[in-house]
Image (cartoon, rainbow, N blue to C red; front, top):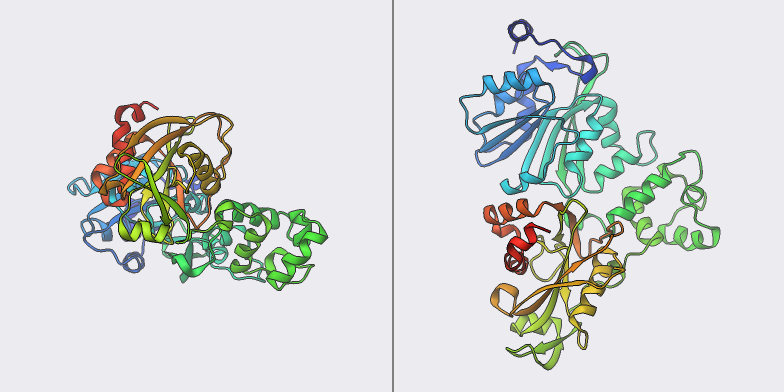
Length: 451
C-alpha cells in the first residue's frame, strides 16, 4: 500500500496514527510480502497476526491459510479490518490487546503460526504472552525494534545478553533475518526495525530442567549485572565451590558470562527437582492385578507395558481459584504418550503402595506440590485398552496450592485451562490427549464442569 493510499484510507475512516500505542504503519508492499514469505504459510495453517494495523501484511495472508486471526487493539483499525476482509469467512478480527490476549482457545486449532509488526512500546510483553509455555504457537516471524531483536538473538559476553534473550531462547531458537530503516513506515519512527524468526527448540537441544527454577535463577542472577553471580544468587562460598567446578567457570563469574546451557545446568545444580532426581526407569516394580484389581504378582515397568499386563495408576486433578484445571503436556521422554496432554499429574502405583499414597507421591514428584489436606477421591476406572490396562483412581487436590514447579523429565509444559474449553478441545482434537485422561474427564462429566 502506497503512502497516499494509506492516508486516503485513514481520512475516509477518521483514523490518525496513535503515538501512545507506538503505531508505525508499513507502506512498502515488497517488504510486507517478504515478511509473510518467511513464515512459509500454507493452505492448512492457522495464523495469528498481531498488530495488523491497516492490513499491510494481512493482504498477503488473507485467503491463503485455513484460518487467520487478527488481534488489533485500536478500535477504529479493528473496525476497518472487519470491513476490508468481510468477504472472507476464514478471517477473524479480534479487538483486543495482544499483551493479555488469551491464546489458550487456539489449541483447538492445532499448532499455529504467529506473525506481526509488533508495537515498539509493548513488543516484549506481547512476546512473553504469546510464546510462554504453554503456547499453541509453533513458529513466529515478528518485526520489532532493532534493540529488542538484538536482545532476543544475543550471545554470552555481550551487553545485550540478559533476561529477555534467555527466557526466549530456553524454548525458542531465534534467527535475526533483516534490519529495516525508518523509510518504509508512516509515520517514520526514529529507530530501525528488525525481523526475527523464532522456531520451537528441539526437545534434546538442552538438558531437562525445571523451567520455573531456571527463570528464578536467571532473574536473580541478572538483578545487578555488575555484581558477581554468586552474590546475586545468595549462595555461600562452600556450596558455590562444587557448582563452579561442575560448570567449569570462575568463582567470580558474572551473569553475562554464562551460556544458555550453563544457565540450565546451574538451575539443576542450584535447586534440585524431585523429577530430576527420580527419572523414569524400566526397572520400576509394579503390582500386577487381575480383572478384579486383586494383586497377583509383581513385574518391571518395561514388562508390564510390553505385555499389556493389568496394573494400577492414579490421576490427580488440580484446580486454581478460578475453577480452571491444570493440564500437563507429557515429556517426549515418557515411554507412553509422549507429547500428549493429560491430567494435572498421573502415574503408576508402585509395588506394595496404595492408590492414595501414590497420588500424594506423584503430586510432589511431578508438580512439587505437598498437599496439606487429604486428597478427595473422585472416582475409579476399570482396566481397559483406553487406560493402557490400568485400574485408575482419580483424586482432586483440595486446599490452597503452592506454586507449581515441573521438570522436563516428566512434563514439557503445563497450564490452567477452563474445563469447558478442555471439553471443546477434546471434541475438536482428541488426538492431542492421552486416552486415560479423556476417560477420566468423561467419567467426571458435569461434576468437573462445576468444579
